[in-house]
Length: 237
Ligand code: HEM
Image (cartoon, rainbow, N blue to C red; front, side):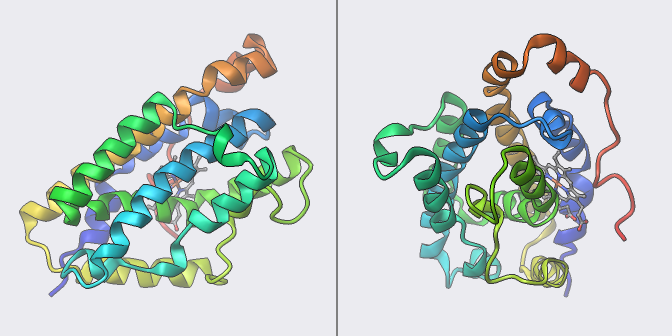
C-alpha cells in the first residue's frame, strides 16, 4: 500500500522551497553571482552536514523505514572531501569549522540518529532531491562563475553513480511511497523536512554578510529585490 509520502513531501514543503529559493545568497547564485570564498564556506558547512547525515544513516541500512531510503550512490562525503582539498589544500581539516547555524543543524541530526531515526528521511529527502534537481543547475553556474574546469571544485554536485538523474528521482519517489509509515509518522517526516529547509536557509543566510562584502550592498539589493515563484510550486513535467 502506498503511503504517498513522496507527494506529501513535495506538497508539504512547497512554501519552504519557495522561501529557500528566495534567500539572498541563492538569488545571487542563480543569477551567476558567486564568490569563491563564500562558495567554499558553503561547501565546508555541507561537508559537516553530510558527514553527520551519512555517518548516521549507514547504521540503519536494515532499519524498516530508514533502510528503505538508504541509497549509498547518493553519498556526498567523499565528493565534498575533494572539494575541500581543492579550496583549502591538504591541510583542509585544520581550516574549516562548522558555522553557528551548521552546529544547530548537526545537533538536530545527532538527536535524530540517536532517538528518532525515521525522521532522518525528512533530511535525506530535502538534501538529496534538491541536489539532484536545482543543484545540477547550480553546478553549471558555479563552474562558469568561478572559471572552473569540469567538476573541479564542484564535485559535490557530481553524482558519478547516477548518470540519469530523472530516472533516479522517479525511483527515489517510488521508494518514498513504499516506506511503511502511518499518517502520523508521515506528517512528522514532512514537518522534519520543513525544518531541514529552515536549517539550510539559516546556513546560507549566515553567508550573506561575506557575500555583500565581496559584491557590494547595491549589487546585492539589485539582485535580491524581487521575489520569484518557487520551482516546486509549478507542475512537474
Ligand atoms: C535557487 C535555488 C534552487 C533552485 C533553482 C531549485 C530548483 C528546483 C527544481 C527545478 C526542482 C524540481 C525538480 C523536479 O521536480 O524534478 C526542485 C526540487 C527540489 N528542490 Fe530545489 N531548488 C533550489 C533550492 C533548493 C534548496 C535550498 C533546497 C533544500 C535544501 C531544495 C530542495 C528541493 C527538493 C527536496 C526538491 C524535490 C521536490 C519534489 O519532491 O519533487 N531546493 N528544485
